Image (cartoon, rainbow, N blue to C red; front, side, top):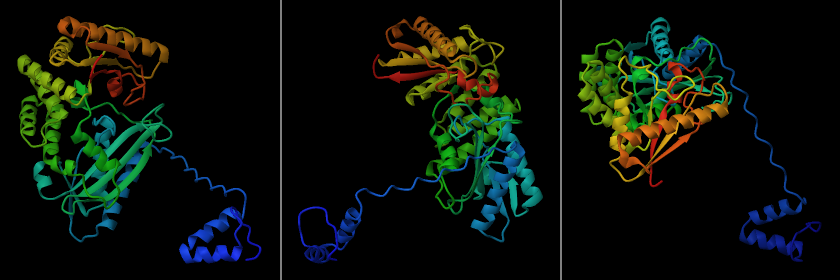
Length: 417
């Protein structure tokens, strides 16, 4: 110890060692480490994760599905046959179902019948859920090279999870990355026609059940409490897509009466079915409830779509355009409070970013003017902003029905102007 080099007051090395051992043993270790060299050691750089290479769409589906089925068999072994229902897969940002997510579900069902006879796949209904089935959920989301939902989308992030309702936990999870080629992400009829989007607790709980869990985690209480409602909504969406509008309307009404019925999919469904059945007054009332719901959540994205490169309203959704009624309802419900309303125009990322921002600003100005005309009391309480493609939710730049939400107009309540 006589050669010990110390940093600080002049204290004999033997006395220093004696004091440290009597008080807190790690003191001498720290002192030795600090005095043995003049600079602290440089921490090793964390390993760089290898980039995830997207594979063709069919291969990604097989990878994820095989991973979940084999994982469920390994993590929750049982000799009994297992009932499985698939809560329809969605885009992990928007919550929309698409042609691609429907194709994924069909391939999962076919794979189970061919390779995994231990699982009985039944339609997602309240009756099946009440049996304590295993439930499969999944998200299929456009992402950039780093796997984030921003910038240039270069593939699809695919998450698939199986939860056991009886055990109350996640029993299997698998992820894959699919190429953009060969994927039809056009929303199915109900989501294509839905006029509005907002952050919705029921949809978020579904997405989190897939993306924010690992095997062994408990199932989200919000998802569990809303699963019967979700099964009714799923049946209503199927009926709507099959043009059975009267049946769909009754299902949406049934869903609304459940404890988890206060959600956007239900209100969009009530509006769409009333409109399709030619019942304009109930449809107008239903759209007003959509507006109230969105403003309460302080985010309401409405697909007020304009013709390409102009500020003239398009007419892509319906034979008789509902845009005038939508703008009247937004004005009426916005004017009820004394707060300020921010109107934000959005655009897809295709073309010039500068021109897109200018065009989105002009469109926001147009909507602001229409709102103030509909309710003069809004004058001085509306702010118009154009952000181009900065707030894209899909980001593929397809400029068709698959990314219509990227060309929406957002409405947000502000405390003041």
